[in-house]
Amino acid sequence: MSTGKNLRLTIEVWRQASPDQPGRFETYELDAVSADISFLEMLDQLNERLIKEGKDPVAFEHDCREGICGSCGFMINGQAHGPLRGTTVCQLHMRHFHDGERLVLEPWRAQAFPVRKDLVVDRDSFDRIMAKGGYNSTRVGNAPEANSILVGKETASKAFDAAACIACGACVAACKNGSALLFVSAKNAHLGLLPQGAPERYRRAVRMVEQMEKEGFGGCSNTLECEAACPKQISTGWIQRLTRDYIRGKTVEDTGEVAESGGG
Image (cartoon, rainbow, N blue to C red; front, side, top):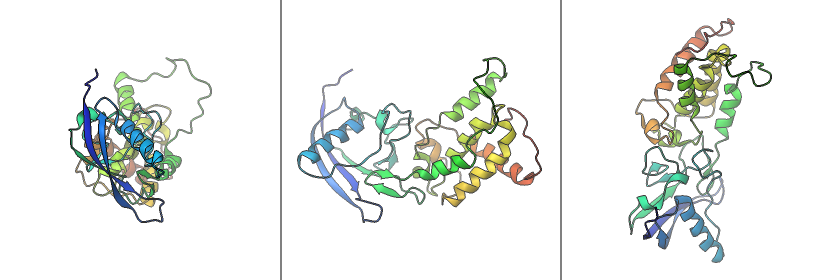
């Protein structure tokens, strides 16, 4: 439903031309911002103005703009993805802000996420973690019949919940240690819970955690800020499962032991 309201906003945006250049905040005054548009549409309007003025537009990542792809993401007034719980930046609408409000936008701040330009960070570290263990090696051939591999409802639901992670990086940005354990644990769980991924369950945990540490992510100190910032509300309970799998994997490493299918 249209509100018909317009907002006057002051936007402070982190501008950084390239990774090797110093950054700074720049301030923009916006008048008559419709409360009905999305946050990224507001940035689109700002960029249209900057281009007309012969200035460099603000760089930010986006793709689907439906909260699915995980491309978008930056800090809004110190909060990952902004003030709404369970919401990505692209799903955030201007009606949730007030007339005359000042908004400070800055990129994810983490050692493992170097700034590329403005609000865009390099998240290739996530891809390298996935390359180490975020897959199943089981040869399954063509798509099997729906009931040929029986999976219990509870196990399937748990795997689906973990698979909801969109790898946006909000958990890392919100964590005071810059930890990626929520991301890693969700990816580890959604693969390891199902029969196809169970044989590599412990080896996967070891490989992904060790790569995470190589990338410079911090450790977990159980403040639970990652869960609060996650737009898909991934549970920190998966971190406990990952920790158990990692310890088991280091204990039985190179023994060839096979994980039991669908373990909790």
